Length: 211
Image (cartoon, rainbow, N blue to C red; front, side, top):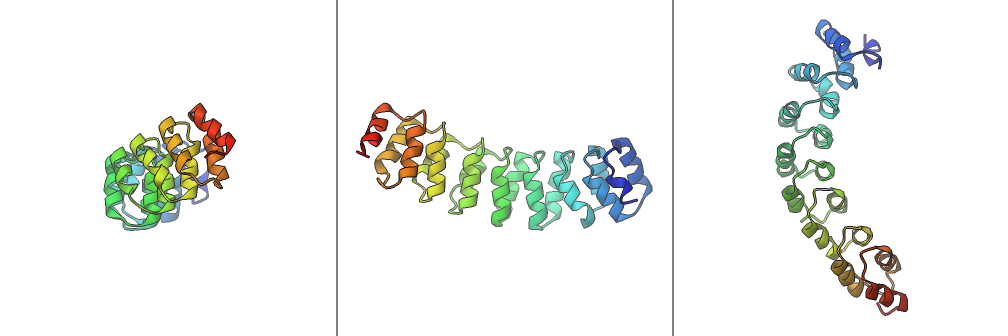
């Protein structure tokens, strides 16, 4: 039965019928991870409250926002919380709550990658010194310009390089970075020189070696 439930050609209707007729955790776990399993079936299986189904339920593209919220309240596992945090159906409210509930860096990194995470949450989490979290925040489309510009002064080479390469970085900020950049930071200066927002007079200074 386990192997049958993994067949990709099974429809959502067939998977729902099987889920009602078997009581074998292995088969039901396979149904929870099957890409064709419907939102309704996943919600019903989530009601069984068994750890065997958690991986599929937390990561499935069809798991509803409401089910993900309930699952997030029922587990302390960093692994499952990471899956929930990375699910595109997880609501901004759930992500905000999880960001305050956990100190686990891996979970917080996933939260910061999720485009559903509110700008206010990203700004609060940007106070960290963890490079992975900071990089995830910078890449998130919800991160405000104010937070992005603050990244220019973070003492982290890789993150500063991202700022200089970002076409959304303002001309004023690129000029400020260029002026405070060490002359031997060739990669940073090269990124500034190739950014279309860099003012012409800054490009001239970089070329002459005046910066």
